[in-house]
Image (cartoon, rainbow, N blue to C red; front, side, top):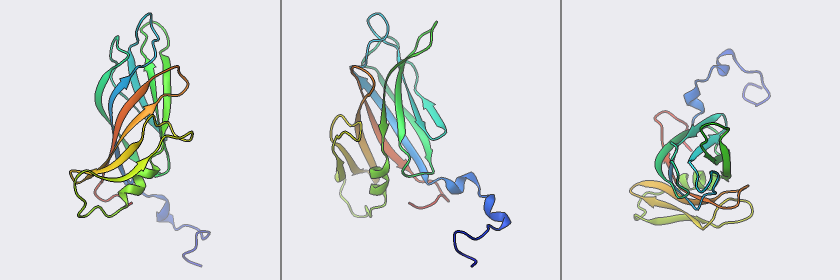
Length: 183
């Protein structure tokens, strides 16, 4: 009776620290936008917002550019390996509400699965997995999960939804935390 999931919890079981729930950190390198939608007269002032669960991070605004180069890292803590993140591009407006320039959802499950593989002895540049664009994802092109320099990384081109045009190029990388749950 003591170990089954329906048994009552002991008093100390509710007070887990936040770190115990975190599997690790997901670093999302926001490289650039390509052919983003025009939301001002002839251009836009884009920035990116990334949301996962209750977390929300954003890049800086790039003025008057529909092909912006952010080259910024946004780092999310991951506690649920099947929770996707949503990337949304906005046009910054000084005197009115910022205009939405499209969004994309990114499933991190294949990336998390690749992290569980034994990469010991793999040569640099080994493709662990290739994900193809489909109606169930926002990929613009094939996306490869690659073992590089002792790390597992994934380069992704996301096609923005709910907008006439635009893509965002990103790279995902995993950061292990000391004392976090092992994947």
